[in-house]
Image (tube, rainbow, N blue to C red; front, side):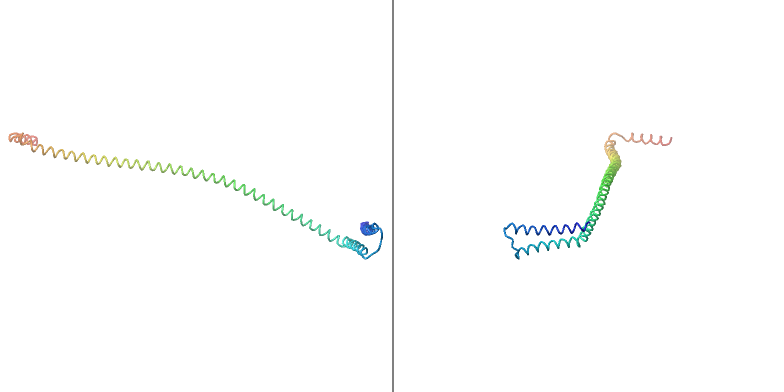
Length: 191
């Protein structure tokens, strides 16, 4: 049935071509079968033969070629969609890793800040301890200087008092007073 329809279609195409050529000629008023008319008819006949041959012999290869191309294009589209899904999955994984990295970075930042504060407090405590040691050392040095100054002042005062006494005592104490002091001292030494 299908081949019959093809043959009928070919005959109809040829008939339509001939009627168009003949119709033009008859419409002109006089019909002469000239070389131009013959060439025109042959062109249509050749076209019909060529179309018939293409339909008969090339239809299946063309249809199979188009089906193969359709399957190839479908496969290419499926491959591209799979690649697209894989890329989207990788993008999601990368975004999750980025978010995890941001969280980890925030945690590391908190640790660094906490370590910095702890280190700062340790440095401040160390500086306070060192300053208290330095203050104690300075106090001891000041106390030693004051003691030394006190000893020197006492020594100087004793020397000055002795010098003054040496100057004034001979004028105040007589030889009798001297003998009496010596006697008192000897009496106290004997006891």
